[in-house]
Image 1 (tube, rainbow, N blue to C red):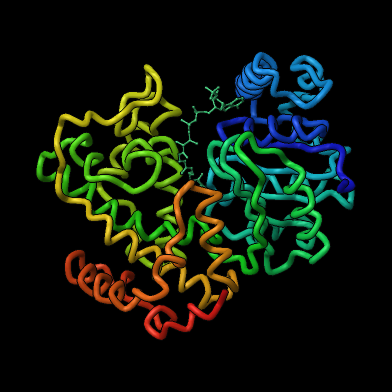
Image 2 (spheres, protein in one colour):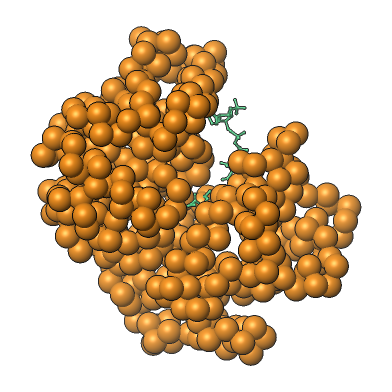
Length: 390
Ligand code: CAA
């Protein structure tokens, strides 16, 4: 068992409370931290609700009770004192670099010297986040997927400054965190590049989605019609966008537009929803109304005939090849397994071993259609060298 007892989770929102709940189930002492008591109490209550649900089903670890586990969950709105005896801190606050850096600085100034500082950022540089922490060698990425209790993936990211020891400790810890649906998959992300593996591979599909959202809005098509075009995963396109959070998408796209290509800039539809505070499931309104629970597209609305699945499939294959090209991962099998564990959808690589030349043509066609240069097929894809990288 990894040498960790006390876990501090900073940010009691959707990701933070999920991480805290699963850490409690693993048997750790957890302190849940946020900027005020109200946020902490809301997160704590959601964990309590989840634990009670598991108790009712008889799914808690042997001998454990919901009340007993919740007694191991402290609450705090003071990060400096919360980390005083922490062995690991996991930050899951808003996707803003300055806020994350401040969390790492405060934790670095106050936590014991051997405490690991991990960020759950979905896009941003761990190297930058940990820069002012006073312990950049102890800073790593630990990227969970939403919903944390049900998605098997935890990416552990090696920053430019992380020590191998810190990364290995992060991996060992992540492997102890249970998942309600199967065994955790914990790939090591070898380079600190935007979006790491899973989000990086799927990110440019958002450029195409923005194109489609904006075109659908301009043509007066409904979100039901667009969703009926089919996304190829377990949730429809607009429901998944709302579920992830419009703010998460907006901040992510802004970050990618500054670090990867201006083509990632948020589209009109996403920008408008973000500005109006319609952030999806968390605010009750995004593309969809969530006030009565998770919405389902109206199948009778017909199709928009706008979204074509062949494009995101080619886009993901191209981006997965860039992940190999940049040395973020060294095996296409790891990329496929990462996609399955993080998004419950097959990765793009196993199925394209013999057909990738066709995808090159699809990408050229997409550049023509959208004017987005980022979709150009990369050398790794065109050369077919990636097929050997198993
Ligand atoms: N505690 C206890 N029980 C819980 C729980 C919790 N915290 N959360 C869920 N459960 C239970 C539910 O009560 C339910 O129990 P029953 O079966 O007894 O009713 C069970 O777990 C399953 O829950 P759901 O019914 O909600 O699950 P589902 O079958 O509808 O599947 C889903 C939901 C897994 C989310 C599926 O729709 C899916 O895979 N969607 C795709 C999600 C995805 O792509 N996520 C990645 C987003 S990207 C990301 O996260 C990266 C980022 O950086 C932003």
